[in-house]
Length: 451
Image (cartoon, rainbow, N blue to C red; front, top):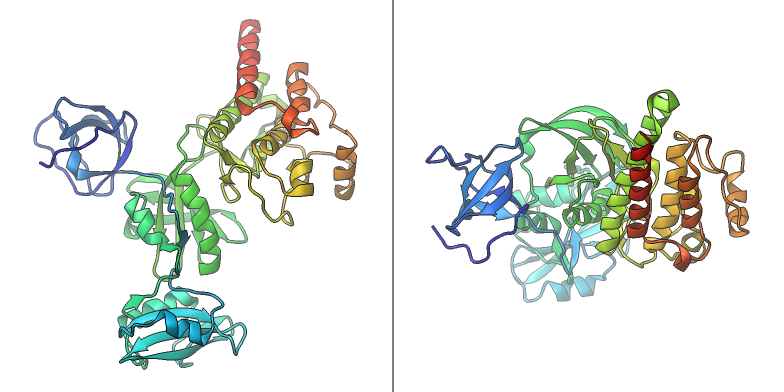
């Protein structure tokens, strides 16, 4: 056994690199690809005490498992690191020198906008093949058609099929790293053959969300088929590898297929999104304690993001999911970025976004606090759309003049006061999530005494 250099702390997640049958009754057998959690380091540094996803505990050999690490590549994660965008024919030729047969890249066509060019080094010179875009598909010879660039490149890596050579080695764009390699290195790659997709539970612009089965466990799967869209979701998946909290929807793994399909596999949340849950149950089912528990769950998650310098940017009841045992978890990290950055505001949800984020594209933990206030209002109004009876175009001007929504029916005054604190027009005057969490915990204790 090789010696383990640094003991992993309790709670460390790891993934099995090999199968282990166990040699004694104290061992925990596992299969390659299983997820395990370290409980304690034993006196022998080559062995850990761990538990599996079913909760069974036992000792495991340290060199059979790989620690799961956040994907924090300094470079730009790319599904297509060989794609160089808008570069000229001459620039492509310079990049493929010295000539190495089979070295290749793809660029946007300069002569035919909308088309692409495959540039391949072969026998000391560079050949340029126009990739035409026809009826939504791509082709070089108008005999073989492909759904996307990844599928096309994959085909020609297996067979020259009329090209001067098959594609052997990608010329990676400077500053980019292959997303597939990074997810694999961090222990996040899953085996597509072990994922059974079942029924669709949600549809979006990007693709479907499905219920699936991965090694006997029920999971939720975002299925993104288009390579350009998948590229955008790679950022979301990489953020999720860095975050671990009981009130955040947990990423389980990522599958990147060579044809451009991307599957983001997360824990399954049986009761769906919070806004639908609130609307379908209503006051007759949900009491004040249940509502307060949801607000506490979300405040826990947001305090964790705040501590780790992440801004969610799209906090709303539709992006909070509810588990089988009624625990609320924040999801949808599509817009999440490290704190204090800017983004295009064209697609922002106006009723949930803070005035400074809409006006100056300033996103921060404090803009998330504003959204949290709106989320509290959604919870206590049982899923009503915020700013009822106010036309959308009037919302921002009224809010900027100091307008705040009324207290929802039956909402305790102490909770409504928290909403108003979140809606302070001065971001610096809004409370931190840590403060909000403590205040809500205090309210919860007070309610407990009354009950």
